[in-house]
Length: 254
Figure 1 (cartoon, rainbow, N blue to C red):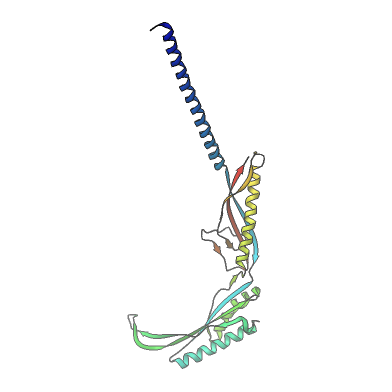
Figure 2: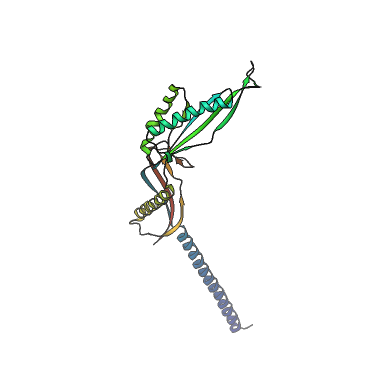
């Protein structure tokens, strides 16, 4: 093989090698751009901010509910009913004197309990002892301040031989659903305000909302710090503090 032929072969081999290397470099550059784009896209997807907004409001109950129970006993049903009637009339007179209107007073049906004697061992026998009749009266009014005083005084009827028990008044809100919507809106505004403050001067801006999760409402006594995973709904106080939290995740943009 002459020297000219050898130079031709070597030149051809060099060109092929350079071509292969160039193709490898081009492929590497392309893959690099693909991975870079993917990484940048993943970074964009990860550019989020999660904040918790809250709202608190003092509200006043607009419904008061109060239940009392009157009972009467007797050796037979007639005597038990007469005793119950006396107690019921006494309780009704007391409620009327306290200023409650007839439409605010709802009596329940009469409940009957048969009582049997016990033997020396404390076990019930089949020997009839008598009957106990009871009746619950429920007072429901929008005059929430008019219940506490009568509720604390009605058991004084026992001094007149009336068997009566009284439950603590319950104070509730009639438009709790509307209040919840209002509180969620206020908590959401607070979340956006907090997010804006956090990204201020960082070169980013809030783009949109990714997710939002509403926490349970906490309706407690005024100034209470009690919380519960299932929510609290206090009925013992007329005035209440209502708190609501909203957890919002925002996407960020440059």
